[in-house]
Every structure is written in structure tokens, then in C-alpha cells.
Length: 130
Image 1: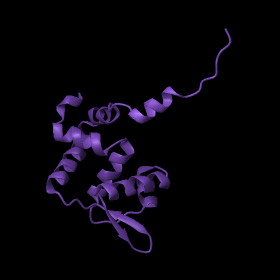
Image 2: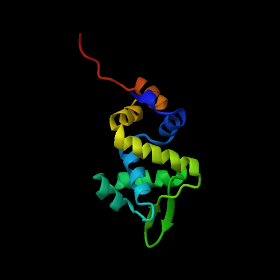
Image 3: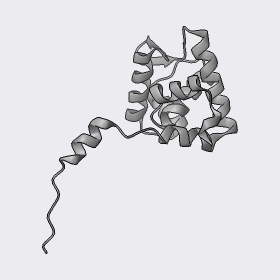
């Protein structure tokens, strides 16, 4: 049941997590917070394509959920300035361990993207003969 999560927890998920892959990437960064990761390493660890991992990592960088470390190539490390957000991510990681189904349900129970829904309303469909 998704109502077992606090309002702050639900709000963070609603604003920052759109997929299980994104959630798992954030949890992985937090778990190995002393390590710098690149997209290929995240992709291998989570069994996702490197281009998807790169998109997730870049998004974390924009949202302040990861620090961009530029060495010979772009790498990311977990670094959260706000201790409250770090604690919330810790709670989310624990919930993913203990109440995985409820958390996944919360992630995928969000309302559909309104722009996509609007665009789909104008999708041309092939007419079927009477």
C-alpha cells in the first residue's frame, strides 16, 4: 500500500523518480558514495544501456543529486548538500529493500504526463472501413 509513505517521501518520489532504473541508479550512487561512476559502469551494474545510464546521471547532476566530476571523461559521485534530502534518500533505499512492491507501485502510479496525453489526443489513427 503506497499510503504508508510520508508526504515528504511521496513528494520526493513524485518530483525526482520516474522509473525503477532511476531509483536503482540513485541508490547505487548513495551506497558507494566514495566512488566516481561513469555511464558505462552504472549501465553494467544495473543491466541498462549506457545511454540510459548517461541520461539518468546527467539528470541527477542537474537536480543536485550527484556531483559531476570531470576527469578524462565525465563521472558522477553521490553528493547531497542537504542532510534532510540525504536522510530521505536513505529512507527510500530502505523502503526499496523492505517494501519494494509498494515503492514501485508509488513510482508508477503517478498521473500520466499531461503534455503527452494532450499530444496523444491528436494522434492520427487509421480509419477502419464500415
